[in-house]
Image 1 (cartoon, rainbow, N blue to C red):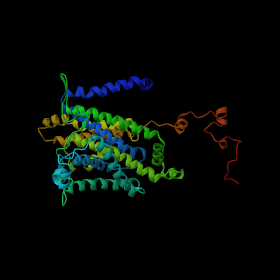
Image 2: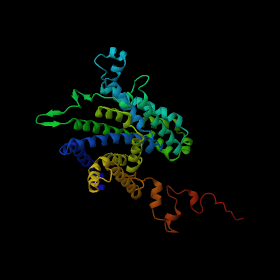
Image 3: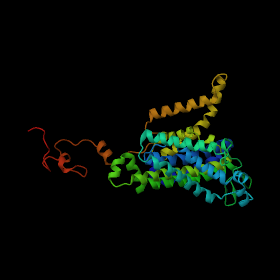
Image 4: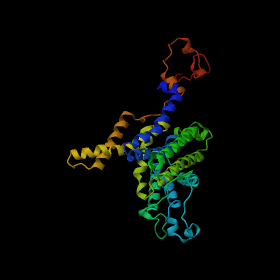
Length: 397
């Protein structure tokens, strides 16, 4: 680890080469593996957004998938023929269909999802722990139920049928939904989306890191450690909590926009409670509050179910079909998570402990009678040295 710390430019160059060449390597095994990498990048964005709420501010959110759904349906409505086919007014205004630019949809998706995050956070400002988890869980289910039933009396979301024929992303004249030909070399659509998602993930990591080391990030962490003490020190805990909900939701909204364009079809079944639980598990399994750990947890938990498909199938064949492959795959995922949590309770890559308290805890005790024992240091109060300050109060007369 010290080698990588001392050679950061070389480490970054190696990581860049690996990340840029990964889809080309996976492409030789089939586009399905590149698609797994694409979904892993989307889940990294979701985990980074939830880490702002759970890891930085310490607010348990079990309905984070709702913001993912808001962003997905926003792009689905603005980039599919559903509105023009359903409403005459839209058809008259946009006779060729409503095809919204990506430059408008990404900030709009972040803003709308952030607004929903603030609306969720406003009534939960005085809730903590289990009560906050129950309220956020209910919020996520309410959004899913609304999406499932807003097809009557006015068909807005098309109900359980979902939205189809969603436009692919078009950027600088490049259509990400079509294969790109470069001489005798071709880049499939899934590979193009990989590079776009990778760019967005890098921007998300930079933004999260800057927020973590900023005054806002320190305020969030103060609220996470002790909200009462943070409020006593002058931190506006109400605004900081709302900002955490809004910022985290904005990341979820952008990820939803990308998911909708990547899939070309969305339905309420893609935004169930299990998705929220999996995103929370990514943050906790990787290392809550630590950005590299969150990225690692998101990659493992998003790719592991797909990889285990190739393990569950042969196991099912070995038992003559007595074991159901999907159930066996879920069992293996659960066992892997249990084993990791038992061996690494703070996560696979937890945040390193730091501070003077740790230094004092790890430092050896001074020898009695030595100069170190009787000389007050930076962290030693004068009252702790015999003969200095006020005499300690005695309970004996």
